Image (tube, rainbow, N blue to C red):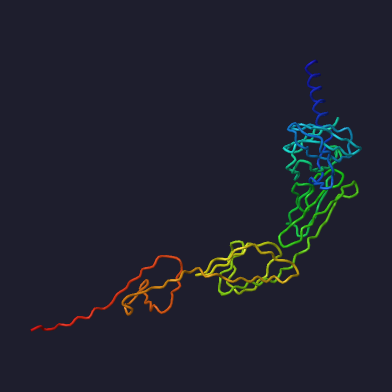
Length: 316
């Protein structure tokens, strides 16, 4: 009998643990440049503390950190934590909820002395999750809900409340929007707006240079083409000239014309030959010596020769 009672108690304990409410962070961290922090409050190293504001619909929250929490200023729905700049992890506790361990870097929080960041925390009960469906056109667009990937037309379990949705696809405008899940609103539809290709012209002096965009050859200058708005790594290459390479920005609704002038990649060679009518060959090609010769960097073979005339004579 005692054995059965023990098993029953274990089962009940397990049920209670798994039925605990859960806290979660809503969206990403927000930098508060105008937030003032008491700079007289110092950490264990004597430095001005960094500030972390926790905004929540829950009350009675307590906190721990890997280093230390120097001080907490609490107001209804808002706690300001004074912590070390090096702090990376903060854990939130509330009775009846599973502790919430927050790795600050995962939410874009970059602490600095005297600066304040904010995180929003809410509490979701296990039974308050609802199945929602997000439908997107085109259907292969990337969907992210509160930092987690989702798929168009497929049901996912989501807590009641507000959630941040980002939808993106190359060639389309990205949508970032906040949705609110309720008992009545569980289906959401979005249509991405296609971005128009922009006319782009790439010219060079002299022309005939090879064009590379993001390391893909696109022909030679002067050339017109169509590209989506965005940043591209442009490289122009022409024999005998120094390469041109830079990031270009293709902008919607503007003249996207890019022009470049090449610099010769040559040296000047002048030869003084005695006698002046000697034959000069550079890499087996005749050099007349009338003007300096432009040569690309490299090794060259120079040959100088003069035909010697002979005649037989008789001396008496």
